Image (cartoon, rainbow, N blue to C red):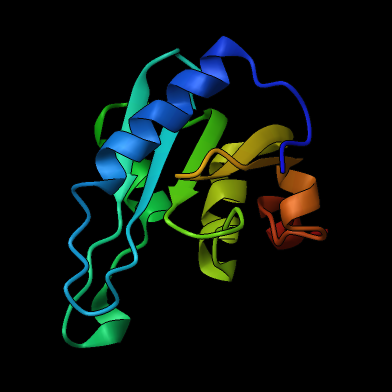
Length: 140
């Protein structure tokens, strides 16, 4: 499953996501997920899922990559890739979709990949149609 040829930059993001997924802390689910972001500045950031015995206290890979990006001084996602050891590309959870939308324009590409090489690329708008945004908080 590959929807379009991937650019070298996207292939690099997938490689970074694959690398960091191997370092995920997943003693309960054994479900490794990695994410890599190319920020608007061109800098690259990685994140992996980190579980906790109290399940709601875990952290998703996408959230970890976003936190690394913010800690690195960037605030804009230019592209993001997510990889998991799954038969089909795994989309970000609902919360991470909203987190991605906070820092990415609606046309930013989100590439989901499997360790087996399958990929699927969508835009943020396709990933989260009708995203809640700052515009919803503007007062008349």
